[in-house]
Every structure is written in C-alpha cells, then in structure tokens.
Length: 231
Image (tube, rainbow, N blue to C red; front, side):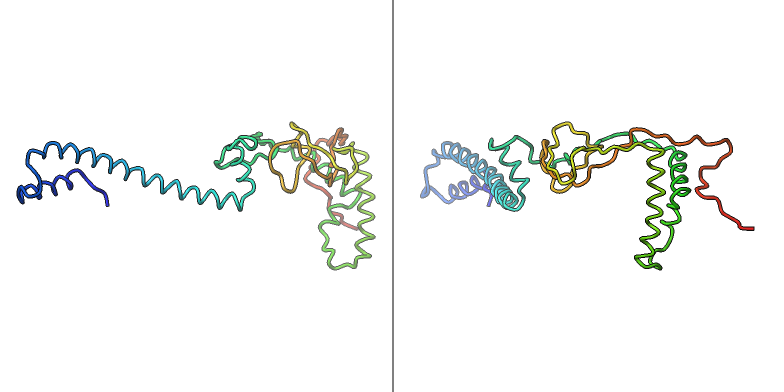
C-alpha cells in the first residue's frame, strides 16, 4: 500500500497528543526531517517496483517468442552482438521486388492482335472456350495437338523468345545481391538478404523482339474471330 508523508505525520501527531510517554516534544523537528526522508525513499521504491514488474513480464514474453519464432530469435541475437544487427520491431517484407513502381496502362491493340493470330492459326480461343469435360482424354489430346502446332507457329513467326536463365532446369544457382527481381522470382522460404542459393524450377521466358503485323485502317482489333455464316 502506498505510504505518504501526510499519513506518517498524522500518526506521529496522534502519538504526541497522547502525552510524553511516547517521546519528548523537542524531538519533533528532528523526527519530521527523518519522516520526510523516509517517505521520499518509500516513494522512490514504490515508483521503481512497477517498472521492474513490467520488465519481468517483458522478459517472459520475449523468452517465449524466442523459443517459437526462429526469425525473431535471429534478430534478438543481432542486438546482443551474436549476429547481424537488426531491429526487433515489425520488419517490412524484404523480398526482392520492384517497390513503388508506377502502374501504366497496357495498350490493348497489340495483345488483341496477338490473340487474333493465335485464334487464326491455332484456334486458341475456340479451344479455351470449349467445355472439354464433354470429351474423352483422347479427343482432347487430338485437339490440343492442332492448337499447339498453330500457336507455336505464331510465336515463332511474330516473337523472338529466349530463356531468362541459361542453366537447365533443376540446376543449383545463386542469386547475387542486386539481381533483377522482375526477371527472377524467388519462391519458398525466403529469409534474410542475398545471396540466395536455390534450385531452378523454371527458366522463364523473355521477349527480345516483336514483329506483329500492322493494323489496317478501319480494322477493329476487338474482333478476334469474325462470325462465319455459311450460305
């Protein structure tokens, strides 16, 4: 229970009023100074007790989280000089990526022209829009072969593609600091900073040249495939 100077002094005054059998009245000024110092000491002790209890609670909570959260334990070890120094507070996602890049509208005409070519040569839209659940695997396979041949012909004629990574899939590669995060996407458990060592799951594709045909005046690129009327 908190102890105040007023409460202590009231008790001494009560004792003084009851007579000389407790102490000599001439000692009251000296006792008052003693009581003041004692009260100040008690107030300081009470003020320190509460922060100490909070610190003990913090120690318990930190200990539990260190046991269950390896990444948090790694950051704490950095503060203690046992690893890379870092802050304990909430950490932003440090995965390599393009942050804050302004979004731009994609011109639709080129995409529509390419889609029209895929439909013309490989019946791509027809195949995608068809409900293949109605057909057997053998029938779907025969149709997919036709679509594959036509779409492959369009890609080879109008685009030049190269792999993003030259290594064969399944190879172990190292992502050095500063790697192009728009061309290489790390997956899985990503912790810390580059270099990262992993297995190449897909080489990726990069377009280095486009040769799409020009659009004639009055042509509507939104018409991917004109409706056909047999007379």
